[in-house]
Length: 493
Image 1 (spheres, helix red, strand yellow):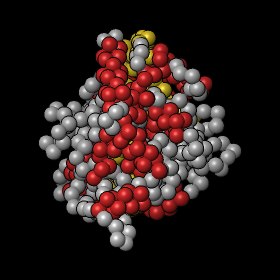
Image 2 (spheres, rainbow, N blue to C red; image 1 turned 90 degrees about the vertical axis):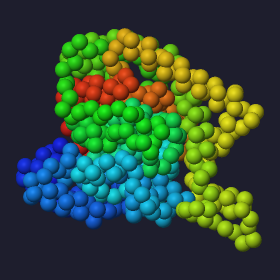
Image 3 (spheres, helix red, strand yellow; image 1 turned 60 degrees about the vertical axis):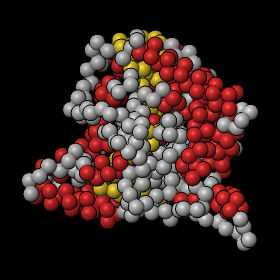
Image 4 (cartoon, one colour; image 1 turned 180 degrees about the horizontal axis):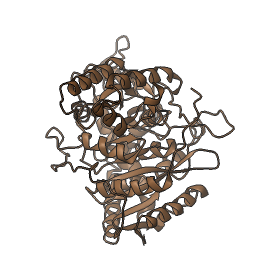
């Protein structure tokens, strides 16, 4: 059954629908693959029974001649940031270890309603804070990729590193991710898969553990643009329980896929040619321009002048919101409680948070609390919000001249685990190309382009106008068809 694990979302759904194989056969194949890939540490919790139950429901529907749904018979991985009823949800933090929600997140419920099943809860950087998947309480996630001629463990990217690793290793056909400042796109680029962050508000945040509420957005990660379109269609939609949810109909993104870009203009931002960007990344960017020209697009130069301020602004806004959101973890209602002998309430708060939060989470809470404090609010937080507005205005002006923007996803390929641990600033720079679209709430996608001289994947990023996921997906499809990316990691796990 190993060939079944090479299939993506569309192939599985269509195969189950036409009777080429049963949903149960698919679920069993992926459950076995997950169990055999423990060395990747991609899953915190596995739920083989959930996958089998959903598969049996899909097979029963088919036997009755009923519609299976757009994700019918497809087992997926669920990032452990989404609340799943009756299944532990931890955000990869000790402070939530053992927490079992009594409710289902809106996004996961939509996926189950569309016919998907759950293989398990995927590992991530703790509270989605990180770019390498090394801050999880449950241990590092290993990328299935290795440098040619080396056995060094590589980073799968972050924070959705469990998702990217599982999809790239063929132990899940697709997975959910969340993107606050690049946490879908950067890991997708590192592992040679596709991932799209939709327009802010397109997918409900209800039931998703919050990091930075004005930035967090859920999205799909899969091995093709088509699979991302299908899964996003299942995930998206208005939710009255989320005040930031877009009250808009969900377009038929799968049906609307079209790689013909005649009449479209693709912008190339001059400010993204940054010092320190890998030469092979820049070369793949040039290749991307040629692919889009070949698809019929016109390439135009655009300017995003406030790009260099986007990353520092993000690392003020996101920690500020995190320090507020994470105040709820106090040891009183749920999760970890550390109560030293003779301790009062404040002592319990302090002991619980000291034991429960990891170093990176503590670092960001401290930064966030500092920039929101009385003497520094205007100097830091207010200024960062002004920069955010300017970044959004840059994109508005650029989109007056083009339909979408092409840029690298990351400044480098994946790096060995542990190599940047002592240098948080270099780690933060990994998100330099991803953060501007997050600050502006725009749809953005990473598509695999090529492999570098070390045999590691490189991704290209398409940023679109607000609500124009279709344009982003279509440009991604044009790149996918011309890149012909078929590289796979050699199995070592």
